[in-house]
Image: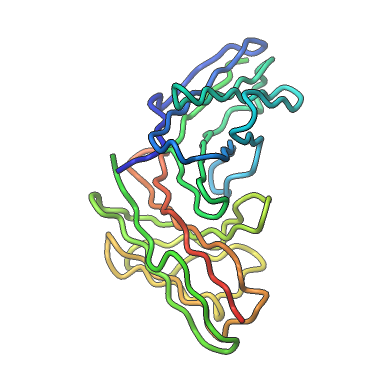
Length: 111
Length: 114
């Protein structure tokens, strides 16, 4: 059973606009969340994290929002750049050890 | 949705012994599986790409004689850490590739070498 879901397989955004990537989870025990970015033929690289005690974390152009009641988190990229084109994975953990990943959303930023 | 399992979820072994970790795609055939290693608060590090029926492709810096990968079937890949040392203690994660870009990740295996 997929405990972390990314229901949008792909997303296209114009350069300079906002990209919003969504992630839903089912396990209410999850208390730590991460976003990864992955280019083809490379391993995922860490982008940004958020713990359940917060509802927002910002790092430069990247902001992650957490809505615990809805079991939903989102990654906002503003402004979007062509170099942001990649596959984005969200991951969640209940213990800080074992992570559950979404299946990814492929973002294309159009110049 | 597709599910990938890993076994065991946690293992503790003594230095010098070997440990095998299994990665299974439960409801789809995965021609390609990936093995990652995660250090605390760091990105996943891709160790190797495993294609069914052929030798794994290792990333630079990963010792292929130490981390033996076998992808014997379309649903099973194994990672064997040979002659484990305490510095091999880490979190090992596998993923299986679907038809397009998507990857289905296993829950990971916590290896502790004492």
